[in-house]
Length: 504
Image (cartoon, rainbow, N blue to C red; front, side, top):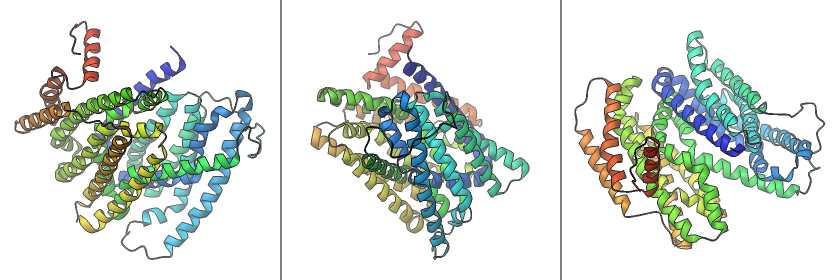
């Protein structure tokens, strides 16, 4: 088994472990410390939003241009990273402190909770520094093919082990918000150290080369690509990460904490999509290389059809179990709010699952620049709509629903626009008649299960409801052969259990 296969198998384990931790945290930890959790999520969302500016697209440059440096030229590559980061972060720091000064000296109007940012601006600057280092260390180790462990540190250790750990320790010692934030920053820095040490042979004392001493590369080309990278990253974060930040700033920290928990429940529906997303790009790329449009169209339809079945089934499990999940959390008083938020976000995820190949088709085509246009439009629209819906449309206690609806509407609109774009230029779309079967099965399963009376024990209800969804939705979907891919996978696993049934 080669390096890539070994790392892929380990990454599956890391991904599964991360999901389990996320479920445990959102059921048992975050609801108990919802206000401070909302505070940390608001700060983290802000740091994630501005951190691409602090490195000026260096992560994108590293991903694209690392192949230009041979092993014997590793010092030059390290010099590029260190010098670029030093210059970029220095410029960012000047702009950051000027911006904070302007905000503090002007009327901030209805942004009543912006003091979350301004009162902690020095610590946030330090947080951006550590988080940017961690991001670069993660990208560096991915380039070096240390995928599993670096992914664990970056996507599991910090957000799903450090945060709940800090919440528990802070509650024991009665920490202030500032102390929580300091603990979070230290956790980020420790994670950076652990990440950079993975298989690293870099000597801290090695003599670095000047930034201009870069082989076979044009500095203008690097800067242009870095600028493209920062623009793409920033607008993507506006599109997909601005909601928690605005909920925290415009409403309250408690609202941000609740929104983050409900968002996690909704994003559980994305598990099938996220699990194959890294595989989609090279597959579509190989089809583009061979100019095999028939295979692109076939893969487009098959992927959308299979993901639609899976995401709809998981959605049924979440929405039908929601009352019991909230009872376990001890947050049953927020049932209506949770339903609105999860329904809104789930709608965009299900549409995204059907049309997910759109992005990969556009990115791999000669019209790849249009993907940035769509992303910029999505980011700007989501920012404007989220602010407008929270401040002017929805009244307390349902203001956070405005963030969910605006995000969902923006994502659905842009995905449909991409679908029209792909159909116009390549005469293919993801929709199939078999999707009607999925919709029908979903409606039948929902009403049958929704009208049943369950026990007073929420844990038992979860098992019963999930089992009923499997029997009333997934099982008929398999026997009706809604998705060829899912049936092939089911046949494979049945054979592993010595059950020779061909469901294909």
